Image 1 (spheres, rainbow, N blue to C red):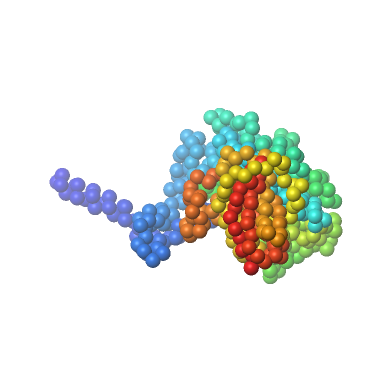
Image 2: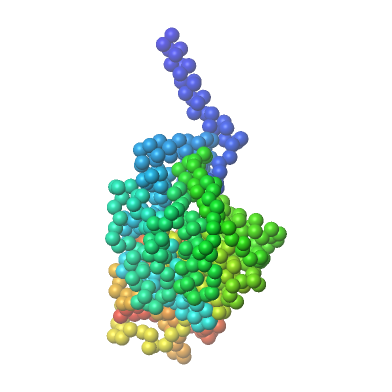
Length: 499
């Protein structure tokens, strides 16, 4: 009898284990809930040889698609998050049921502090963008939008102790030294935080429509373009917003959040991108919803705008809620959701607004903007330069120009943080200012392809660097040597052939 019981128990145990696998062909995982691309089915053969990582990759593939995954995550979120107030599913459960992205905690605790060279690189990068925009007759404004925990710290758990200084503080202090036009949105929102209702969602990481309206007015005041402030507009309150943080905690089920819908009649306008939109208002409402779908590249036209100016806006998810206000204010508006600003594509004479969330500040100096390096003369160089050895310089000859980039020692004294690239021969000499950015992704790709022999695939975090895109017609054909100049150091960067 005892043996029979063990057999029956074992059979039931293995049947229960096999049920999810048996259901896999009939149930699908929700990539919208995960907010990421699920792991693809791996192949036994990779790059012409046996895939030694197949087992690990298959495990990730299986974990992403196991049936009832969403329901199990929701139960886990309820038990660990709401009952025991432990961080789970990248969510911090705060006081009074306020939810925060766990990604905010490094900024809150200052465990991701920029190096001095990174702070300088941040300010220099924005100053170069602003210089280019102004040279085309435009106006520039950088808008870092604070994390929810930077505005409503009182709702963070008591075991999270806010640091007095963090990366947003550092770059806010550095930007005026480099002449960067920026808006201290953290201070703006802190000044309005005691309003009722709150200006951030309880269960979403973003500002609500009230916070967005406050942010819009502050942006337009700072850049100096005529606008309506909608200060007397009324709104309707509806509990129908599915917060992004709530979705992480409860992939299925969950709780709705309040949203505040202004009773504003916006201008008639047209979507130029995406193409083929027949119901303009319905498409706008979709872009502003909690779905976050297909909003990477938006272009609008509005002949009834309150100004005759054009807008070119680099944005992330925070910028979505101010779309209708911006559309009302500009005869033509382009909204790009990207980590790599295409500065070359900005129209002449535009308002160039660069909005980014506090938790994403590192992205400003992770990849160089698409912009041709400005030409300089020797007066831009520091005095008392001295040879400092060699640096491996990567050169890519592309159809849109010549890209010169590399890494520098993270402890290098870079002076004011600016980096210049001298390209010279016996007959000619050119000097350009580079973005002081270490392009980790490109350097890692170069290692994997065998082009790069100096930099490892790890350990580049916090490393200094340089990246310059030279316009195709900026150099005469010929053979040249390269020098990388920063602080008081001059590095031999090898040779280049322009054909």
